[in-house]
Amino acid sequence: MGEIRAWKYRLYPSKSQKEQLNNYLYTCKNLWNSLLEYTKMYYRETKKFPSRKELYKLTKETELFSQIAQNVADKLIKSIFFMIKKIKSGKKVGFPRFKSIERMKSFVYPQFGFKLDNKLVLSGIGAISIKKHRQIRGEIKTLTVKKSLSGKFFAIFTTDFETTKVQNNGPKIGIDLGIEHLAYLSSGEAIENPRYLKQAEQKLKDAHQSLSRKKKNSKNRKKAKLKVSVAYEKLANKRRDFLHKVSRSLVDKYSLIALENLNVAGLARTYLAKNVY
Image (tube, rainbow, N blue to C red):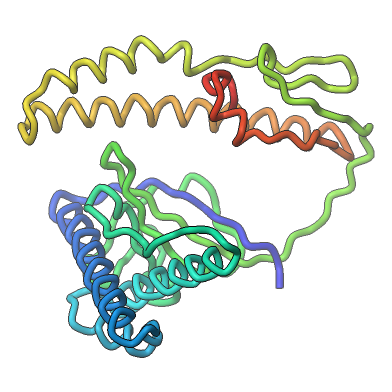
């Protein structure tokens, strides 16, 4: 068995295909909610959880491709498993939440139902234009079709392929994460913090103010909400691109990289959050 990797590509569906994709997400949302309601009712009556086989039977009532529908059931089973695990560890948790359409942003083809050539062919939807900006390596295992907050669609493939180790005879380095600078290297160098959030702060503030002034459920509010989502997406893309370039340069230059054991998630909940990547 080799390395599992994910490959993300932008999709360009036609208007009718976009409607079909959105309908799949809506149907997945309804299926999740109905399976969750059945699971809660089953537990109230029997103090047990329904089996995978029982949930799979319920998925046959939808218009979804069978693999996608079964994956929704698998996700619910996984959530129930983690809920039980947390309860056993002494944590107070409840059932998974019902989903609104805003919280259902992807569906999965676990094994079959898709084919990738010059276009991505999806069972029940058809051939969708895809921008293959790099060659996929390895055997494709799964496909996730995901919708971003700004309404863009992406195809995310997972593959299993054999990796080849590349010998790097460079020096060893230690890295401390910082606030004023992104990181400090034991060589004495510092990696600058570009502070993309600070640069985008006024634009985000204006977008939020514009959204707050719009009437609920109106078309203008939907447009304003989209502008907020696009602004955050651009910010996330800038951060992701910067971190990828920094990490790539470090890996190419050094043979061993040691990092401090820092609670980044904890720092992100403090007043320093805006400066933490």
